Image (cartoon, rainbow, N blue to C red; front, side, top):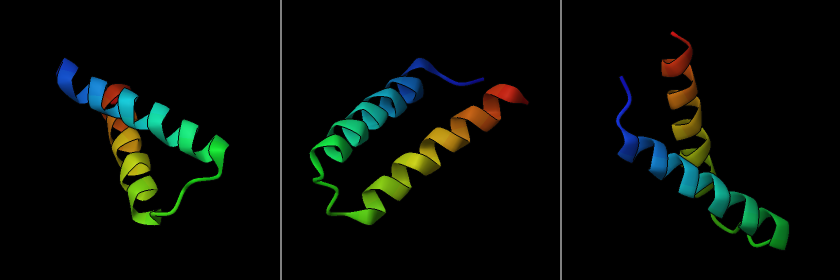
Length: 48
């Protein structure tokens, strides 16, 4: 079971990532990797 806080973190993270990506301002690769990891983790847990 995923709590709402985790979902909110992922959502904010995803939006932030997309906005930065559109502006071409992704400077920190590790940040995007963390975001993608979070999103993948939540998606996996939801489908199980």
